[in-house]
Length: 211
Image (cartoon, rainbow, N blue to C red; front, side, top):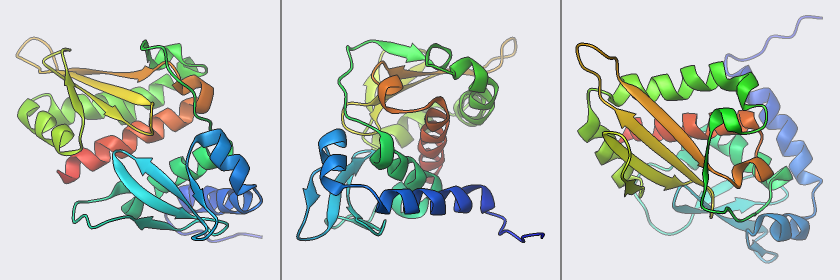
């Protein structure tokens, strides 16, 4: 039997699968594992994602922005961001980093997915902002990222509490094309799969374009 899927099938079908798995979880176990507070009264977790606070419903996965904020919120607008969050709720955990950072190739299975990561994230970042470094700075500063000394410009942004990603960029010239590097705090491998890191960077770069 042929099944006709929507054009967003690559995101929609796994999302429905994750929603079903999420509903079967114990909210107190999720809260203990992830560090996200759970309100039994409101039936929701308080989740801080890319510096913005949300209420994530349970057992039905719903997302609501807390407080008044007119800025663009990726967790309300991007299915990929919602998948990243629900996957973390299902199987992620809060763990402290040591202050060291890893390249994508250094995370487990990073070598396997490197080609995808390089194309979707590093090359996209380099060619989107290599000739617009001021725009790179402006977007990440509006997203609450912290400037670091790296490349022609570098910033560190917090995905979830304690999980940091560093974006570094070098502008191109007549001799060399623009380039970039993306680094992850060394607690990522304990809480995320290599594929999740691709999605996380994809979401951040997509959000940068809004600014």
